[in-house]
Length: 350
Ligand code: UFG
Image 1 (tube, rainbow, N blue to C red):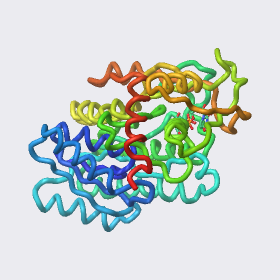
Image 2: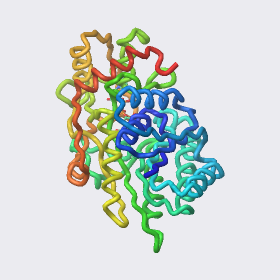
Image 3: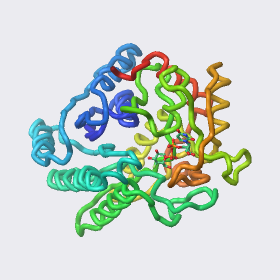
């Protein structure tokens, strides 16, 4: 089965490409490399060659933007003509910085929403009607720590979050096109961190990281002086925010389980939370990182960051019950693997 992976060179995308190839899928990645690195997919191939587990590594890479409908059309046509049509899409392509989306909302609506519309239009034209979409837990209204279920109120506070909601709505309308049979999954990610255990692929943010985990690894590596913790007066047991961190390989494997789940149906639409269901405070994350890696992380406290929620934890019951999947790696694995990646690749893929 050939799967198209828009945005497959990015952090979650590259780990999912690895998991797909390990499972014998044939993949075509389309990526603009605007926020990713071409070396990531070369490393994916290197890992597979080193492990010697996959007979035929079938990965095709197209450097392009999904807003370019002509490119997408040609791609689908090429595989159709080869008699091996693209049968499913795992759609990662998009901008993902909350802060940048506030400064440049039009860019976010253009890339994320227009890009997705193009993709769906071309998929429809070529009768490819299975899609797994990268959505986000950021779309939910805060619940004061009650684990978020898929039917929790949707109320994003950033343009980034609103583009995710818009795409989910477009997918919902697409599902309802009369006489067409679509299979659609919106995967709402919690906080993916860590890296593949090989340390060969991982998160490589451009510039100073805004997420906590790459910030911690860069402090550990001596690239940044100290971590600023945003707030110590949150109503939690230690005063810092709580998040549901999930190992990026567990998240990657969740995509394949979702694809396999969708294939059991003639038509289907589902929203699924992908998280561990476990909450970890900022201080607990730092402590675990320090302990397993035996490194001190210098830190200071500042006031709360605008837009942060106190506790964001998944209710992952639906994913656990529908998919042949559960997260297998714990916080220690996330901290060990994430540090291995950073320490072996001080400047990411550069
Ligand atoms: N934090 C710090 N210092 C930092 C960075 C973060 O203390 O330098 C804290 C934040 O205040 C928060 C926690 O670490 O309490 C996690 O922050 P991140 O920025 O790593 O992650 P968020 O939970 O804010 O957001 C992430 C993704 C979003 C996604 C969301 C889903 O960045 O894209 O999870 O819940 F939408």
